[in-house]
Amino acid sequence: MSAANTLRADLQLIADWVAPSSRVLDLGCGDGALLSWLNRHKAVRGYGVDFDVNNVVRCVQAGVNAIQGNLETGLAEFEDQRFDHVVLSQTIQAMHNTEQILVEMLRVGREAIVTFPNFGYWENRWQILQGHMPVSETIPYQWYNTPNIHWCMLGDFEALCAQNGIRVLERVVMNEAKRIHFLPNLRGSLAFYRVARQTA
Amino acid sequence: MSDLTRSVGIVQAQTAVFDTPLHLASGAVLPDYQLCFETYGTLNAARSNAILICHALSGHHHVAGRYTPEDKAAGWWDNMVGPGKPIDTDRFFVVGLNNLGGCHGSTGPSSINPATGQPWGSSFPVMTVPDWVCSQARLADRLGIDRWAAVIGGSLGGMQALQWSIDYPERVAHALVIASAPKLSAQNIAFNDVARQAILTDPDFHGGDYYAHDAIPRRGLRLARMLGHITYLSDDGMGEKFGRMLKSGDYQFGYEVEFEIESYLRYQGDKFSDYFDANTYLLMTKALDYFDPAKDLNDDIVAALKKATARFMVASFTSDWRFSPERSREIVKALVAADKEVVYGEIESVHGHDAFLMLDEPYVNLMRAYLNRVAEEVSA
Image (tube, rainbow over all chains, first blue to last red; front, side, top):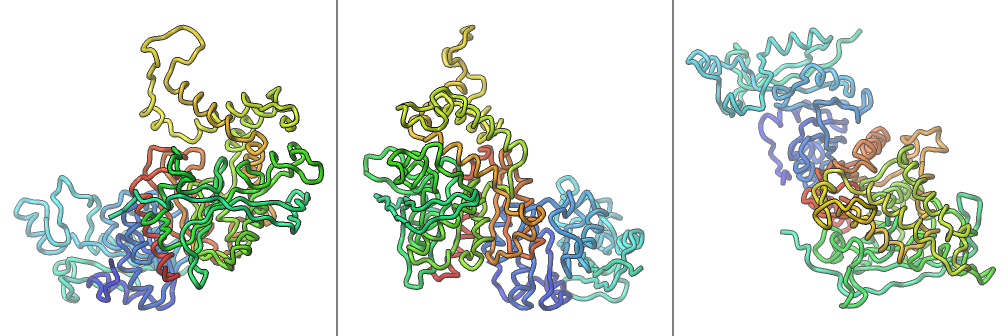
């Protein structure tokens, strides 16, 4: 059960960005921990989306409304601008249609929150220099069985946003629950972005 | 963890007689009628733990348990309804009924029309899903149930659950809409019409008044059921079960039963035509065809669902091509657009449309988790 009052540090950072009583869509919601916490502490309304029926069941057990669906095929179930926040937490690097989901998120929502493991983190770079693909706490897979197919660093993600008319509202880079301000693309293992459509 | 073996045990059907005329969508009026129903579990003091089970095309009020210990078969949803089962009769008061127009004890075409002393036959009015829901609401009144903790149905039953949430928003806390659709597609209607044609063109049909001729349009009913059965199974499921298996091991170069699938379908058709009423079959398929809660709202299903205050669980099955997952997603999309709370599960299954009556594990888990939430809300 995810009825715990403490959230994982990275989810807590996302939760802090969510306005009380807002509408939230959590893509790749897993067991519903984030939405369950937001329901109870910020009275948000919304849905989780997950590909795995077992996660839908876990969400129901946590009191979260989850809709089983495949993010790769877009967000056809959701009309334009239905949500205040659309969250995609540590999933974008595992998606085929990376650009499409980013665009879809800002079609159905006013703001998107995207988090991903920063491939530019120095430990990753160091492992590459040593001749191996990185394996770490945030990247716990071997190259041959990883679901992660679209790695990026901070600059890459920001370039993709710019290319799609998306503006970065806020960026936080963390390493083991600590915020990194100095040399974030080198010292940060996890990146958090709050983005929105560029105003015309 | 899950105890699916216990049963509600020996049950008894009850009858409720209504003498308030029922005004139907067709304009016809049913002056009086009776509804056959069964209940399982105990209604709590607050009368808040009641669940209504709506049946599909060939279903009835005998949802769970047996009438005698010798009964070979239990009720049609005995695997889902009972003590410790997902629709837990230790926590809920469960009501199953036979819909009007049925042939299992509720007033229908084979009942005697008090005005003539003869079976209704062809003069029995066509029923719609909203007509049924209205009659079910009267049964709820009779049982002292102001508000259902949940209304649950698969297929045509799911349409009734959806209609309940629209027609009596204040009387439904949760609607569980399983393997259903917001309305039939042209293909669905086409299948229904072939089934109806099989019955209507049977020489023993006598325009629907076969009772007076001591006849039964058995051939038509049998064909209708065989056709229906094909659409309830998936190609893969059928292939897995029967493949190209032959009864006698080799081709006979004739038109007798050769393939196992032929044998199975004929058996199902024969069995069905022994107990089911052809007029009821016609009526049920029409109720399916007519179901369209958005029809009077410029086809705007979102507008129709805006009225609902229930929370929803929608479920579909991957191999169901009669009411495919896409159709359930239409319901989900409309519910989201109407700003309703909804849970949606798309269950991996080889059982086709019939999967809603089976026990694929994720389906059981989803039902159990959702109904546990319902029970906790009413402290059951």
